[in-house]
Length: 77
Image 1 (cartoon, rainbow, N blue to C red):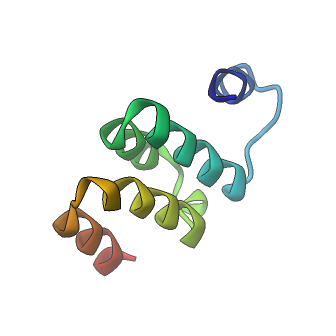
Image 2: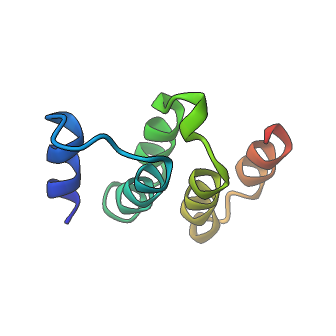
């Protein structure tokens, strides 16, 4: 699933909506880990950093017990 999503995004097959970015972010976190998900999040345009993207990033931090990172993102938002 993530390979298809990455290919579609990279090749411009479809332009991701903010919700699709959040889903992709969640997939990256599950497959590649929170640091890759964080890099993807940081590369997003500001208009794509919606509450859904922040929630997906938060879901990457929680299993790793990264409380400080979680709180820092929510204090910025």
